[in-house]
Image (cartoon, rainbow, N blue to C red; front, top):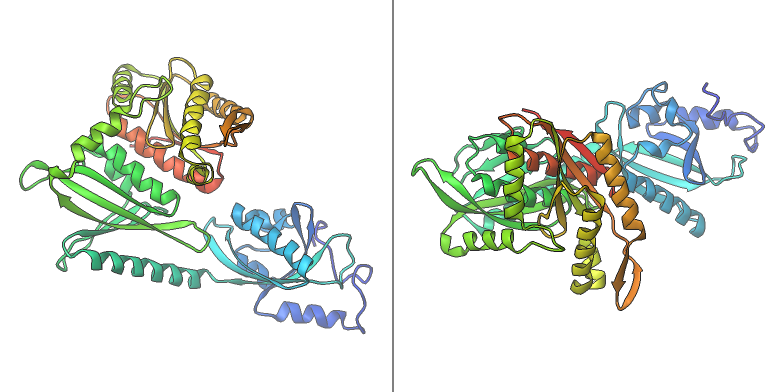
Length: 445
């Protein structure tokens, strides 16, 4: 037995109970449920006993699980790990059992859902709170629940229109499915982000950037978005205008697992061209260029550069909640402060502009990935000390950025939308990993 995990059958640490110690553990090892006895040691959950079924449930062998004995919650999603601690201390305070559904990574890196039922016990001698828990794998049950939510939302959208295409985006596997009307066969596009970067993609190049931004926004957080784009009508060999409505499907903890929606043609009088032009020319703030001018500069630099280039998309974390809490005036000031912090952090030769809403784009040439991480760390530190006027008082800004970055060594075939799509996809991963973090991806062809 690994010395880090206690042998709770040792009479030195278990409270005698009429000589039934052996019965206890024969019973535990014969149970269908995974059984775990753990103690809460500060910010760690240490295993004292795990039955054989436990390892089958969480997807490890006993040997594979050895590194986690001292902190068994480390394999869980960050927010679910916090929930375990909250439930445990609530259980101690109220003297009740606790029930919790959590997500965790198995040894093969697949994600599983687990049901944890636990109660505090006193038959183990310890200076820390000790709990007895049963663990069950409820992954298939969750898949069924999620599919029901997905089908319900698809049906609701279908009822709203009989002429539109339905779409279903599985962002985890990067697969888009279009469901045409009138019983035509579904169109399934695997590796969808790669497809959007191809010349064969029917969406106008300029609009792909904004289309992806809106799509990836609803992949990151639950909500609904609308975007209008120009799409090539191959029959007429001309661009038509399409309106796409996205709606994200999330689990009970707000984690998005699917995006559904509809797409339909509209006429130009709906104001697409005027709105796009306004979006691209009105987002100049804090001395930063508007997006149209910035994109022109980036394209020119890409055409002449032959070194390593990075494009980073920096997104303010929890900005919707910030807006609701402090109001629009404070939110506008926060955007201005964020722009100033980014300008001061990155070198003068960087191309920086406001992307949409609370997102900023930073384009850098001839730097290393470690240098980019250093700059983002510097930005993170500046956010922690920045002051902002909130409700008439100067207070700590409480701002943080999540960053998705794309890089490549420039060559003839690199396209600006390659950078945007890859960086936006990286931003989703950064947000899922941990708010305030950065995820970097190389552009692949």
